[in-house]
Length: 188
Image 1 (cartoon, rainbow, N blue to C red):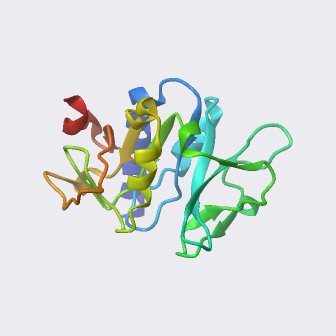
Image 2 (image 1 turned 180 degrees about the vertical axis):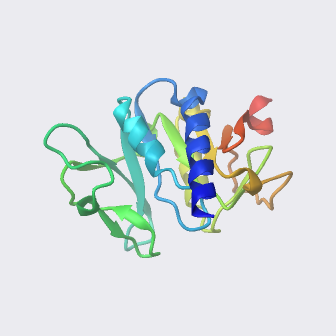
C-alpha cells in the first residue's frame, strides 16, 4: 500500500506541475499534509527548485492563520529541513516563525495557493476541517491569485458534490493523481 500511495503522489505532483497557476513564478502557499490529505512535500520542493518562493500556513496561539515564507538557497537549510518545522496548536506540521530565512507574508502577496482538502466537488467546493481557514484566505486573495487556487487531492477524494455553506469559497483548479481539471464554478 505505501508503494501505491507513493506512485499516486508522484502522478499527482506531475499533473500539478503542469497546472496553469504554477506555470510562472512568484509566491505560492503550500501545506504539510495530514493523514487524510494528499502529501505535496515533493511538489513544494520542485516549485522551490523552479524558482517559486514558498510559504506555509501556521495557526498561532490566538487561532489565526499566519503565512510564513521559508527562503531557500545557498547557505540556507532545505525547504523541509526538520530545523524549520514544529507542530502548531492543532498538531499540524507548521513552519517555525523563528527559523532561518522565515518571514511572515500577507494573503495579497500570494500568486498561487495549493489547497488541501478531505474531499473536493467538481464545481470547486471543498470539504476541509470546518474551521474556515482556507475560505477566509481565498476571500482575501487578489482576483488573479483567486484564479490560481489549486485543490490537491487523490482521485478518490473527488465527489460530485460536497456540503457547502454561504462562507465557502470555491477553488479554480483541481489536481489529482489522474489528471488536472478546471473547476466547473471557475469555468463560468
